[in-house]
Image (cartoon, rainbow, N blue to C red; front, side, top):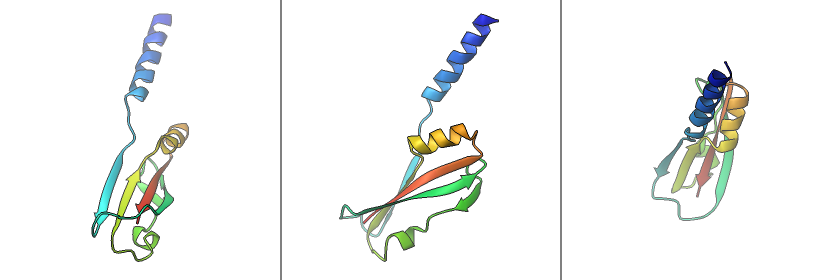
Length: 97
């Protein structure tokens, strides 16, 4: 029994350690030339299947013609998702102008 529990613990810790945070980037116009950044959290339920509040990248860009959109699940986003067992799953959107 103790050996089984130990093996399960090792398997769970290993699977958590081998996971990663996802990220995707979109470039609008030419790649952003400035260093101005706007960051906003997106809110989802049920592992990201149900959007509750999603940022509008066009509004966040303030009419810029050239900007980069990066949406990712940061460590903090993943931690919150893990604590809530995937019921609440936030992501972060970063607009660079």
